[in-house]
Image 1 (cartoon, helix red, strand yellow):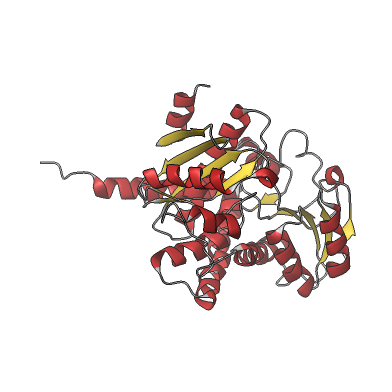
Image 2 (spheres, rainbow, N blue to C red):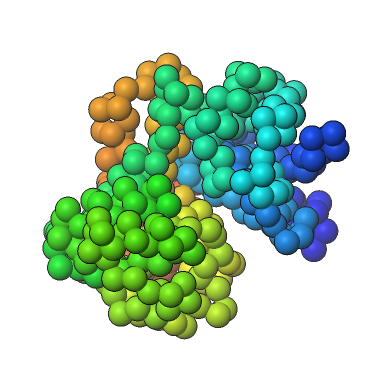
Length: 352
């Protein structure tokens, strides 16, 4: 499928390829939809194998941000950016060059932290553009609030799917042990859940063992762990043709973006009797926090209260999905598409 066919099929507005050979920058910015407001979405840095792989990832992530921001009740559209390269080798000059590309969009895109980009990097980016959130005097690192939102989504899922009001004694398989997963695991263990974890970083696994008494497994073994909840908290596309038949859980609820390699796996999971909570619903805590920062109304307690609303949103989606016997992803998609259609209708000129 060509790039324009892909854009038209999923309603993308703009794809921007950014290059600065003097600093080694190759980046892609994708604005998916700005109907509801300026597009908010982080920038990640990752050593993609091919440019097509990078493009596929950033387009999926941008679409997810539109849906995430809409269902979080934010007057924001969705976008995402990727910088192709090893995050361990990034320079201030590269980050500043990227920031200048962001600045040229004059606020249509607001950037933030993501995989491979940390709070220190955001401080460098803000030297070249004001269209950035997650700064030190604002939210800083929003990972704890993202984790809190996933936790609230899990609570709703456990209530609706497992018929329990507590995580006590439940088994959760956590894929990845980054900042969000660490904060999430802390909440899970606090509530009495048992966690099994995997990560490519041995130091992170050591920490999980010491801090959470976690069971450690190899990366490929995480999918087939007998558990109540599978929590993808690393990169996207982890539920795919290879892994979908390995899952031995009742509920999928994690922090990773675009967990489904393709939309069709949402219904595949339904047929397997597994309920998957839409990632863009339950991992919206960070987006909510930085949106408050952008409006100048951020304080941690207020942000936490707003993020707690993910519980009610998840409950609403799950009730409808279980009643119709369809995927929660389909219900959530329909809700967003209705919101966008209604907003576009408001903007149409009156007919005479």
